[in-house]
Length: 495
Image (cartoon, rainbow, N blue to C red; front, side):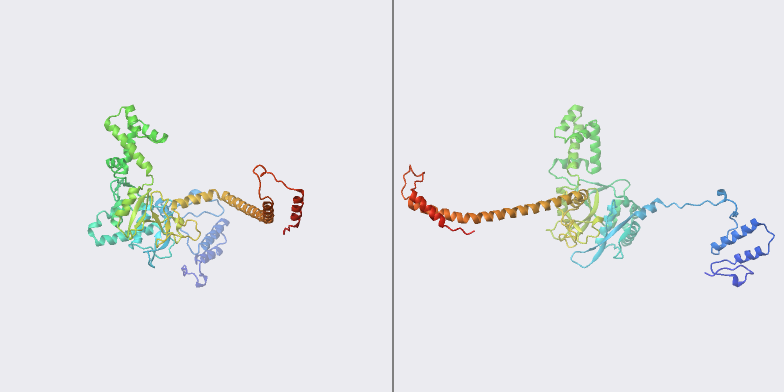
């Protein structure tokens, strides 16, 4: 940048990064020898300040502080401290890793999905991943390692706006849905309805469910009771999970705290509601409330994973093939896929950031309610075989348990493996020594058995007839004994 020169200043005085005012100040200082030392020091200080400021002229409004006097803090301008908006700080921390997977199956196409870090927004990630797998939105470029909330919110908003332009009747509620998009960073408050696998109620002001509806993403759950069970009748009375919790609170109020105490001490028996009603003198209607509360609490405790086998069968038979859903289970939203083949199970998308670099771990089978029978599969739904072999063929719950066990007992496992190896070596050595002794014993017994057989044959020829009384005694003559000794001396044993 060219410097701006003062008037009446020789061009030679202008240098890059310096102001011409420095030369004018020096000239005025030379032609004024009668000024005192303080003014001279002040002039030098002003010139040095201008030089260090790379041509910035000091403002006349700012107070000039002499060099030889200490600065008064009251005369200095206050320093303004920039405070970041908490929402901005929060958005900077909202960054999640991505993973490149093959999709659709049996094709060469690839897409980036969003992985969930620790305590990540599962509802926002599930919504984005369903839209990505449906090819409604995409993350670019393909080598992108992470995405922020601002990036995901922008592509979702663009997608919704494009849908609204096609269908003007769906504009209603768009602003309310977009206003709830930031709330998905904290999760999503929804209320499961017991009557259907597609029924939910919105808690609070609402808007999150409308957002899923506008995006065309269907929410499902499998927290359904068997219609032939007693739990089903009690759950149909309350209708949804929130009303069921209110009934539990009402039952505890009616029993004056005995309802909660019975849960803390031991499992309630079928006679517990009757005993409670008799003790507290409850009416028949109140007694029925307590009885239903016991039934509902037993259902909630038995199916704490928020998935029942009746719900699993309902999902397998009711979902449309080759479709993607947002699946609610265990207070978590994930992507659920129903394959076209009826022989294949349901699959949930693996979005744990621990598997972000495991290319062969893409889906997890949904075959039971607790995940004990689940296995990991790749993008083509073939059983995974990871490079390290740490998580191959095991469910996420089993992988986490094994990882914690390995971390806690690392040294113990190493010592145990060494002890087992040493014991195996000792057992092998002992078995080898025992085999050698057995072989030597067999080699000795073979010649001895041949001698015994010959000796038995000669004795049978010499005693053809024996009486029963003398059969147990050996009667020999001196001559026969000497002949036997001579025959034994002629035997040859090869060792």
